[in-house]
Length: 234
Image 1 (cartoon, rainbow, N blue to C red):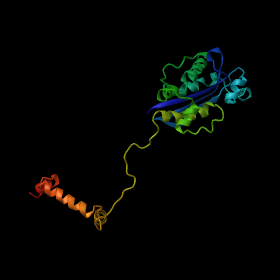
Image 2 (cartoon, rainbow, N blue to C red; image 1 turned 90 degrees about the horizontal axis):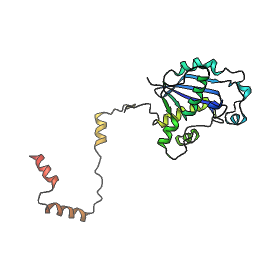
Image 3 (cartoon, helix red, strand yellow; image 1 turned 60 degrees about the horizontal axis):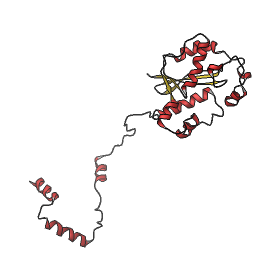
Image 4 (cartoon, helix red, strand yellow; image 1 turned 90 degrees about the vertical axis):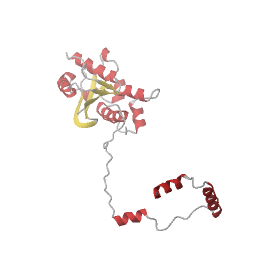
């Protein structure tokens, strides 16, 4: 069974190497492309202030995370959850950059064994020279994003699951050519279906019929259908 982990993060800013931190992290489990009920999700105390510019994006305030666990407090659970399975993220370089920075900060190694699937790269390959933001892909694939009032790691990860499914070709739950309803009919009913009660009227005029007969007679019995009928009679 293929297990994949869809990940998204919200942060205090854009520069992991300059001291910005994670304030929300979500990881959803996919089993053979279907989201399970197994979810890892935490709001994180970043141990620093959240700038107004970041608050306007995701709506997570200092007050909201002041009593939340630090990344150090959830790191063991996080590593256990993702294992060595493939990680799916939109603009994976951003999210993995922050996650790896947090891992190094608490004395853990960066994620190197997990294969990475970047849905932004997939979208750019599939739709070159077009907008491939998460919102744009939702519009393109008809994915409902009405719940995405602001950026949020959990809601964005849930939306990304649907977008990822579409990028992979969409979901088809039944791959067999199965007839769900069996139709039966008696021999009499089948005969009634096969035999017309009367011949269909011809659209040919009598002059056209005469012209056709004259043409057939001129072939001297060499018409292919006449030769076939003759062979069948023999």
